Length: 200
Ligand SMILES: [Fe+2]
Image 1 (cartoon, rainbow, N blue to C red):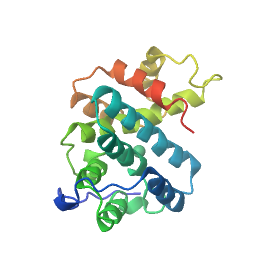
Image 2: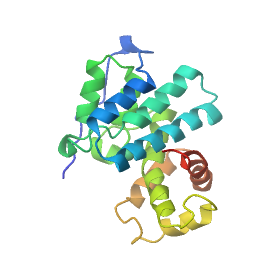
Image 3: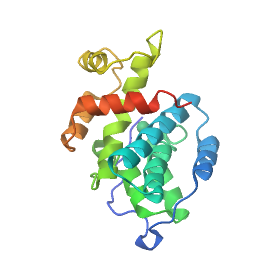
């Protein structure tokens, strides 16, 4: 698999600002595009954490929180069926549906090293922060008999320093993402544990 950079930095149309799909419509798209339960769960977890961060840390209103949630829900929607064109396909679909450009840019910037799009605003930066860490923390939960129950930040930090654990999770991406926000890694790990543990 080789992911191609998107080759552009502008997405959607400014005239579509505030034009969002409902969460039900996003779920429908996921059900149509993503047969893999594990991948759908990943997107639901990132969505839950994004929405919670918007509401709790950014004092976002309902519409803004839905933007964060939608970006989380849809960011890997094309990954399973179009691995070589990951990100491009879902972006074009959202542009076709006249979705708010901020949601599209957020999805486009969730992996700057891969897609060549820099995270601009806080929503962009936080999806980059949450994406790999959310998957990593879920992998850590799966090997614990009690899953998320009793999971602590220290054990996650230790696993991050163990290259053989969840080796596919790129530690450099996590370090780069964290460096772009002024938030301690410990706080982010705890937030993810607290907000994705009950997502199904
Ligand atoms: Fe992801």
